[in-house]
Length: 582
Ligand code: ATP
Ligand code: MG
Image (cartoon, rainbow, N blue to C red; front, side, top):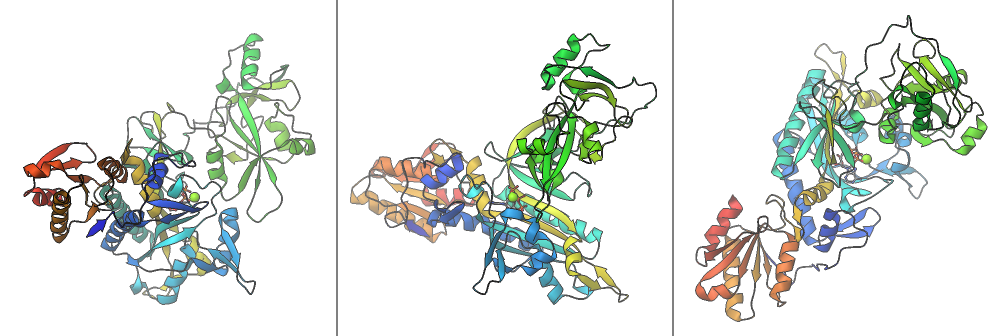
């Protein structure tokens, strides 16, 4: 195929778009791949659409290879199935809800578990029908709080979502493994550098959910990995190893101390160490109580919640939110303090919380027999040696404390280091949540119903365009891996005279006949403009037909390495075809 730049619907930009913060966004706009049409909504121009389609093709090939079958649902969906699973309200503000002319409620699908479950229920009834895996490549809608970085986080985006339906847990495990393998092959073929991280806290079993993160500074996900083992996890999924509970016998009594002007952990520790008490204290000996309020979807009223963490750590809101999902979480305001006078700002202790019915959840390090310095619920007063399991009993534990580099790895091997990534895929053993909601059963061999168990698996197809660009670019522009490049070769004619143009035409024609797709810069602009555009657009092989043609040579440039090679004009078609075929 030949794409002539003289008529291609493309105008590259010399300037960075004002709203672009990350390299992929900047370059995809400058190189004319995408254009912003709405907040979180992007149009695909010809070159961008090709990259998107190339990614879709790789995804489809690997999904088909594991036996998944492609179907397609509408994006405009009725409310009822989502009410049945609770997601109509659980999704909160992220769900686009609309009404039709008759006033009936609809939504724009953010993900399609409900529809797939109903589809299988509609078609299948016997155990002999299972297992089955179905997928679609489809436009999804989410009213993201912070759409950002172009197609990286859109409000309308393309996702591949697939779902597996099995009769038992072993079947689900097998479907999950197949998807995991397919995802590895997809992301390898797309030339991505990525990690697979644990995504749930493990409460549902070790491999119940994993995320694929493309390593990138621009990523919104922070993950940690061990220095000494294969452990890797999303920060939200890190499970803090709890120390063993200790004996209560012989521990000193709790003592309240007057600690004037010590509203922060730092001032408190300084005061205690200056007070000449029997031992030295560090921030880790203090118990910091952070007050938040939560609200379940669909509720109006907020409920107070106390969170206790060791004083040397901050509360990580993302971890806290993940732990409280689907509840909404907000920080308390002055008005909340005013309405609840038992809350003494800066001096909140477990005592007043528990005495006033405020649920109190603590970090897993706060186990029975540990002694803490914490607020005494009275201005300017702290209590020392307040013992967990003796002087207060938390309502449960929560993973809310920040995870830090240097923390012990939860698997007991090595310490944690942190890095950032872009979530490109997510595989998840759902179990029977949706099958229960819709009573999806198969009639077993003994004619008894068997409840189906499901998995759901997503890939951010449009996000991948940005994720790949994020990993494959330099200061001059994009540098596409072959598998996704909008063309195999970018051929630039550098020169004005007809022989150069004719030479270019001939090579392009022969390449095309060999099945090589060529982006042909046949414009009459200066060579400098053409070279700059070729670097910006990022096709992996650039052929320059110019002055050398008179001597019988053309130049072949590797976009990634910058390496230039002079090739005999008669050999260039073979040479380039060889490069393209790898
Ligand atoms: P994120 O944490 O980035 O919001 P998510 O956990 O909401 O992602 P899933 O619901 O698992 O994502 O969706 C499956 C895949 O769809 C994700 O792994 C991601 O690659 C992609 N995706 C999710 N939200 C968006 C978005 N707003 N724009 C583009 N791609 C998205
Ligand atoms: Mg999301």
